[in-house]
Length: 420
Image (cartoon, rainbow, N blue to C red; front, side):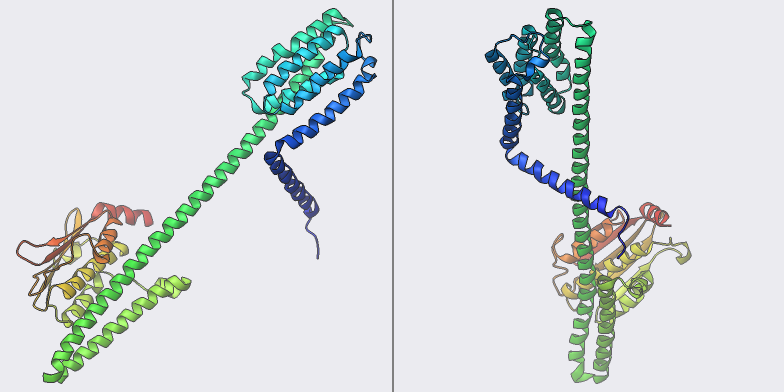
């Protein structure tokens, strides 16, 4: 198997990143371990230097040994607190540096101040770096005055440059950490937003499916129930009408099964056949109303205006009108009683499209469904809200029930233009 170029480097990089993450995680849990090891290492190093090596660069090799050891420990031991109290540690080291330059020992342990300056640049506000100058410069000036060797700038400026470079390194590392933290936070927020969008989309899809299932099953079962009741009464007196009722039941059942297969096909595999299968539209209103009439409910239909002057509604808006009429007539079949009559009025205005479905209530409850309750009314309101429409439902003063849907044409046109 041929290896992809750079695969070894990527694997090594991932290994190093993984080990680095483990070390950082361990340090976050037990910071005292790393602080103790670092402090112990530098303490041992400065004590070795205090044993005699410091005299190689000292301006005054006659400094007492106890004083050299004390100054060396003052440089190394405070490193244990460098991450928690870097400013205080630098202040303590500044006194040790002042004594080192004053006595002429010029201990190399003074370079440990660079570690503290790095942590100040990494952890504290940047203005604190300006304050550190007052801790670093005075010892250097004292050493240049008491123990001159060459020009003053040769003794002070190089050391200041080293301090500045370390401070810049700390700032660079800090900027990189802040940038990485910002990316991680952004990725986390995007992940949360993605999960929220997925949950909202799933909830919206469940609501849509519930609406479709309620409309399909509820209406067709109500029609079948009405046909079955009528056929039962007609069986004894008029077998021909009973046979017609059975035929209508079969037709309605097959239509319901076809619609359910279409809906389940979209849910199952999003097949092209399921997508191409058209949803009901205003053209299918006549078939819907004929089915309701065959179930025993007289329905009067009024469609206003010249048919050629009617605006062309989007398919979704036509489906909304169809489902509202379907649900309203289904409720009439279930609740209005056997003597009820219904009317469907569809009007095309200059600014809106309205459809009103009313029933007389008959000898039944007159539409006993309470406004705002039940899946049907809620589903109708949700459909209307998709197109900035409104839906009103309630009892009529003279008895019966009314459902009125209004869809503004401006919203429908803008929706159609955005999709075209």
